[in-house]
Every structure is written in structure tokens, then in C-alpha cells.
Amino acid sequence: MNYDYVKAILYAYPSLGRMCEAVGASAENKALLSYKSRRPTVDAAGEIVREIALKETLSALSALVDEMIESFSEEENYLLEYKYFRRKSVLGGRFADFSLGCTERSYFRKQNRLLLKAADIFSKRGWTEEKFLDETDGLFSRVMSALGSGQEQAVRERRKRGRPHSSDVSSS
Image 1: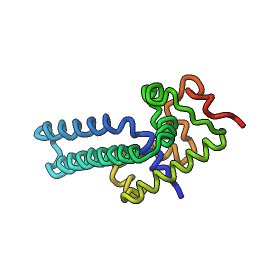
Image 2 (image 1 turned 180 degrees about the horizontal axis):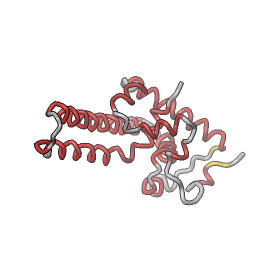
Image 3 (image 1 turned 90 degrees about the vertical axis):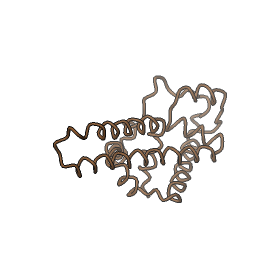
């Protein structure tokens, strides 16, 4: 089964709050300036409604990931943070002394199980790939395209130097 939409949500999670604010501001600005529009009122109103719905979708996704994080173990949260969120302040703060202590092969297996667990949570809450694509109105189309063509490295933020906890994952 394809879980690219779950990866897209996880990669976007650190930015979902800012995206939500930006979409909300855009909808508000379009509403305030709608009196200047030469387009039919129905079209302008429809666009504003779509942006408000997108804001609500982003907010719901962010809340779902927040709930998921709270239900996960410390190790699972580290794995999410390390692979998907990549927030230096969290990795250097909360997880500064965290030791994963596993082989590289085990690390990838753990990441795969974590993705399946996240996908199960999204699925149980009604978030399918179809619903995600429909309700995000093309916002993640480039991310989904990159993930679908095997270019996950194009989606992730690049690290300056290797792994911050390279001793945590041995190469055996």
C-alpha cells in the first residue's frame, strides 16, 4: 500500500501551523478586498470558502499529528523527529541525550513500523490518500509527486553534517 500522503503530512507537520495562518490570512484578505473584484461574486465567494476549508483541513491534520505524538513512546517520537520533523531545537533539547542503540537495519525497520502505525491512525480517523488530496486542494501536489517518483530526498530538509546522533545507529 502507498503511504506517501502520510509521509507528506509528517514532513509538513512542523510548518502546518504557519501554513494554516497564511491560508487564513489569504482568505481574510480576499474577503476584505472582494469589493474590488471584477469576477462574479459567486466565484470570489467560492474561492474564499475553499481557502477557509483548506485552513480547517490543515488545522485538523495538525491536531491529529499532535494527538498521535502524545500517544507515541519516546523512541517513536525520536524517530518521527529525526526523520520527518527535523527540528534542531527538539533534537538538541528534548532528545539531546537520547540513545537509540540499534543497528542501521533495525533503525530502518523501526521507521517502517512507525510509518505503518501512523498510517493506521490516519486511516482510522478517515484520512485516506484520496481525502487528503481532495481536501488539501493541490497544496501538496509537488510533495506527493516527489514522493511518488522516489525522490524523498527532495522533500526533506538537508542536514548540514551527518546524523546528529551517529553513535546511536551502528553500521553492523
